[in-house]
Image (cartoon, rainbow, N blue to C red; front, side, top):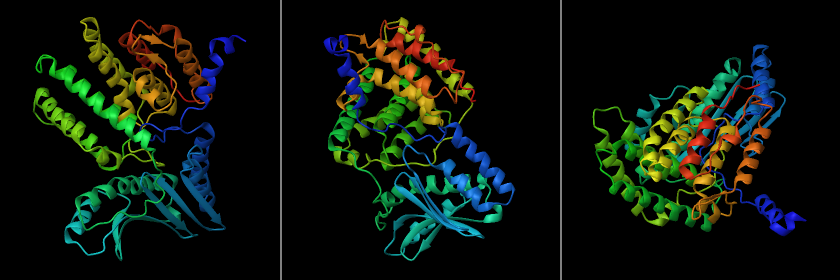
Length: 439
């Protein structure tokens, strides 16, 4: 009765109907216990020389049941498989002697020396796979004898093949006008509404950051400016989920700061600001081209010990205190956001941590999520937090992952809701000390 009177029942109903929109980079560090056990099965079967049975277990380990990113069929000692990785599909087959896999990059109707030179140079950086030309089809290939097809070799070989192909296909077509895009029929569309919202907020976030930077001393605030610019990169990467050239452009802007040279931070900040100005002014249609749905099998970054995550959060939160206490609340929230978003961007995180990060972003950017049709956890206009909803979501995440992380204990009672900066500080402090020792 009280739910009907005060609308609580409607809120739950709305939450159940929230849109299915993926955010951020795919992490393959998200396997439930049963999937992890299949890796052990694959390894043991390989050592027993039961090679085809080992493949059964290996591809089951790779398959993410939530997104169905792997197709695998076997008939006796022969079989075929497909792996989805962004805009590319890895297709393979095997028999009792050999496993082969390949992926199509682009079509080259006319031979091109510059293209072949590029591919020849890139071949030197590959460990398991290689670029090849099949008639007018540019492709990459990987093969192995079944007797040497251990789960580790298959994983790293197929990962190199898939991730390199997914990155290079867009760059090759972009750099060489005589190449044509091909084999992208599996890519999913994004609605016009979602594209419009993402583009509008991209422009708004860039403008907000650049306006804040313009209002402070570039030298005295060089550290805070760097935090804001890097947090902006990671926010756009996570919330826009860009592909192709847009993804590459964000990576390039971040590379300006992390390039190992002797230039002072103030100069790197200046160059990043200029790149963001260019990005903000790019035609909307150009941004729309790189917003589409993809399935992934492999993460493009590697897992890390949780101490690396804890250290990143701790270091950022220590630096945010001065901005919080000296009346720079926006910079303070950006510094806290950097500590955890750097990890989401740079590491393959356990899905439980990504789900906490998703909640963090939904609270910090509630207007953005509301425009996409999600529930609102925070009203920035009135500084009002939906504390019960936040607590319920935290409990739900912990319950869902209790089997894999039985010692994980996010202490909801430590959260403070005075303002967004204080909330971010206390929320990320809890992330810092989570025990993610697996079962």
